[in-house]
Picture (cartoon, protein in one colour):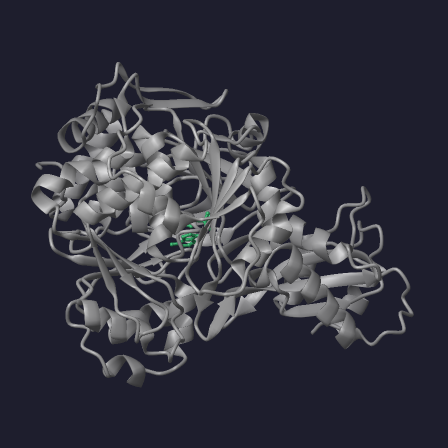
Amino acid sequence: MSNYHIKHLEEYYQIYRKSIREPENFWEEVAEEHFLWRKKWDKVLSWDFAKPEIKWFEGAKLNITENCIDRHLVTRGEKTAILFEPNNPDEPAQHITYQQLFERVNKMANVLKSQGIKKGDRVCIYVPMIPELAIAILACARIGAIHSVVFAGFSATALLTRINDSDCKMVITSDGSYRGAKTIDLKGIVDEALESCPGIEKVLVVKRTGGNITMKEGRDMWLQPLLDEASKQCPAEIMDAEDPLFILYTSGSTGQPKGMVHTTAGYMVYTAYSFKNAFQYRENDVYWCTADIGWITGHSYIIYGPLANGATTVLFEGVPSYPDFGRFWEIIDKHKVNQFYTAPTAIRALAKQGSEMVEKFDLSSIKVLGSVGEPINEEAWHWYNDNVGKKKSPIIDTWWQTETGAIMITPIPFVTPTKPTYATLPFIGVQPAIVNEAGEELKGNQVEGRLCIKFPWPSMARTIWRNHKRYKETYFSTYKNMYFTGDGALRDEVGYYRITGRVDDVIIVSGHNLGTAPIEDAINEHPAVAESAIVGFPHDIKGTALYAFVTLKDAGESRIHENLRKEINQLITERIGPIAKLDKIQFTAGLPKTRSGKIMRRILRKIAEKDTSNLGDISTLLNPECVKEIMDEAL
Ligand code: WTA
């Protein structure tokens, strides 16, 4: 295990330098030592960012579930793999051992096969945070089916767009889901979506809430009776290193969401290695990531990374505020959690409740705290450090993306001295570059610009599902021979990175990536709306919230604006989901546009941020007169 756990800063630099100078040797050693291969690779890496084409461990054969489950059975069969904490604190927690996980995944895999799923088929998983979600994911991986998990808070329209984009054959869902005091009719949402999904042949339904649902004859089946019949043995499909493992959708600045494709071997090696080092996970630690598995954080750091290390990973069904704002701390105390990974938006919401809620519980088990999803502001960082970590547990501010598959910039706890609001140093093997708008790399320290990555890393997404052109245009065309992240960043005097936020039209609300285009499309569907533009503005809890500028077809629209606002938000809830609701809607006579007709979001952003001292030159606009009116009426 020589190069698996990094112990001190000097060692970090040594390993980092090696990973940069000899990336192939470095990753080959990690891959050789720590994983189970059916056949080793012929070539560690081949790449060309111009095409772009990236291949890691070409020629290797493996199954990721043998690495996440089977190989642990001898030494960790009775160890808890998944520790399920239900939404309702009175419902007992479930400890699913590696042996039980093995059996449940194999049974599920056999059910999928018996329902016609084969290697390469796409299976949509729309299941809340219950063990069956993890089991369904692993069962797909077991038989080589490509899972496409859709966050169970998305609406029917968002679900159907994703199902159709990747031509899924099957949906796995549940009758309903629990979220705090609410029960959600998940199956009803699926039924609505499937009216427009001709490719779906089968729907498997997990029983969770016992709600009243309809089952469509010939299409819908309860999962449990099928599982009861299925065998506990399902041989793992032998996959090529570069076979797709999953598709996961993320928003872009324009157009439909992008189905990022992650492949098998490189994703496994890098998520496992980064999990172990970024969290300094030790055998018998209890690790908890509060993200939903519907996002990349859950894929990589609730399921694949922890399980590949034989870890105990907590899966929490509920929300931080139910039954009260002490729930997170209660769970940490109850299960003696050692590594806790959450998002700044949750930290801000909990901090708002004061420290009394935290003090009621014993958090002494905590060794490492993590943050992900958006920049963590200084106040939230200190609150987290003082009240949760009691100033003794390092906070790792981990920067990464759906596209990167795993953590890219992060302190290593007990190794890298932390600095509030800084993600600090690149993880092993990661070669960041800061470039200016002309695409020139800014070398040296104390520079600020756009964040790119100039060399491949094993867990990077390989393409956008059936749209390689868009993959190339979005990530590899802005700057030559570099992957462009869409984020701004600075490098300080000691070489630490600080992420300054998105430089494109993606807005991060409560740590969720929201592209402006689908939200604007939803607003524009309202019959009274002519046009709209969305920008972000600073918000106490959400980090960034959405501000819409909307022009109406009939400026003298008689309905009162309050009703219109409700109707617009209702449309957004239906088309995307409640996470995309607007906090502010300003009705305006016009939107500032360039002479070529492009909406000048930069100006709107400044107005929404209440930073209008320097709007820049607006005289070149097509309609400069509308700017003053918008400013005067800003909310
Ligand atoms: C933002 C989540 C600052 C960033 C894993 C990125 C962050 C986008 C951080 C990806 C962080 C994520 N500090 N910003 N520690 N982590 N981001 O695809 O803008 O949901 O590009 O992946 O979130 O969001 P995604």
